[in-house]
Image (cartoon, rainbow, N blue to C red; front, side):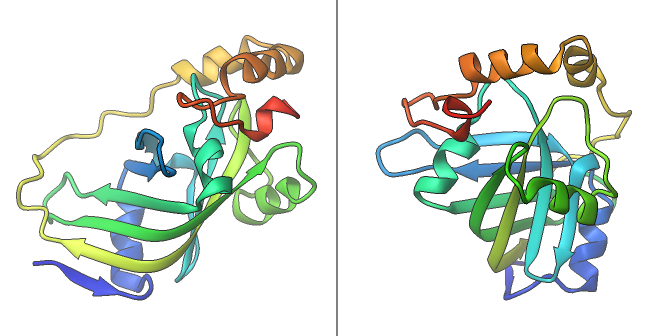
Length: 185
């Protein structure tokens, strides 16, 4: 059943390495709670108290609106294979836009200098609580592969097109909270 830890150990890192999807949750007072699914292809465990992921341009940017205001973030991974488990990582998150001076160093250190088409930011979570639960109610699913739709969408646009899109779609949250994209897309 449920167990709590103050850090990621090797067993939990192994569980993360076997997953293909994770979910992020963020909010601020008075705003909607945002939950987003993401591929683990660009997810990294930096150390036993830190994880990060490279985030592509999408139709919204709630995480970038919420984290500078509140910082609270939860990442959840579920095992859909043989061994059931739900893993939640609680902590404080931050966002580093692709235009920020430290973005390239983070990308080079944790992603071998590579990034997906349309990369817009790196999201980092400083973990203050790790919780596992049984996952007995999680159904079995078989991984068939990554979708390439977002990559193709970004590849079909110029850097200027992506900046314009971010200014239009990523500058404010659903609740009107400004993101970094309002100033520097």
